[in-house]
Image 1 (cartoon, helix red, strand yellow):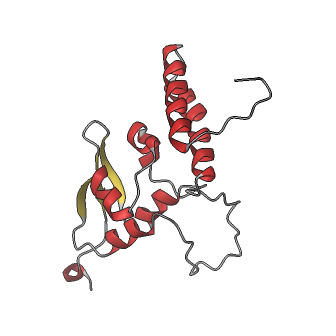
Image 2 (cartoon, one colour):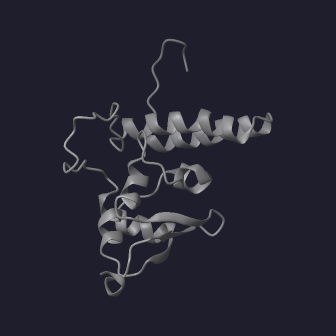
Length: 158
């Protein structure tokens, strides 16, 4: 390829190159948190390029709390809200079927993706937190997570 020649990349090629970059970072002894930082930002950029991410600024304190922010993770929220169980184990494949798309590669690699954090651009976490569930158990090897809810049974109310 000539120095001034432009190159087109597919999303798959970008992800594959990012995977190679991540492996090189690990091979050179960088700490896991450093590798996560170096990889998660480009992953977000690739999602933005492929219309899988829309950046949002800081949340306004004046925002109507009843106004629901649209998220591609809304189907997971709806699924959890309608569950009668207080605890449910789900494989990543089951979650992907509910969502209608694959989870990002960071969900398969990093415990931090499954953290119960509302702040920032964690729309995936808000999908379960707003449904009154939290991640309580995660196994990246078996690709499964357990969501639990402290909701009271209707018989326990009153």
